[in-house]
Length: 92
Image (cartoon, helix red, strand yellow):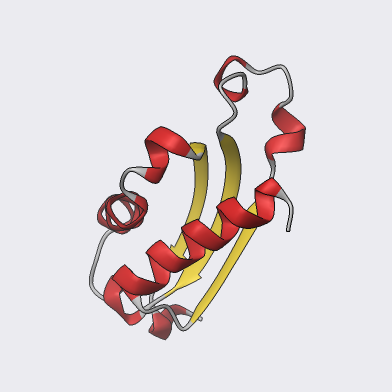
């Protein structure tokens, strides 16, 4: 398994544990940021599309905070940036 696959697995496990999503897609976009200052330390850029009932009644900022809380310390070790699209189950 590649390094990015391992990181995606860690991110997926953290988000699934915290938010029990109905659907979750994670795409490693790190290759698009090669040479970027934030990529130099080896952490990656990821797109996250998540649908969860945990987001019902929450504003977008609160949803993003929930995702960042879910990945926790991975922001210090594996993730430099997340692009998040978070929907509640009644929005799909």
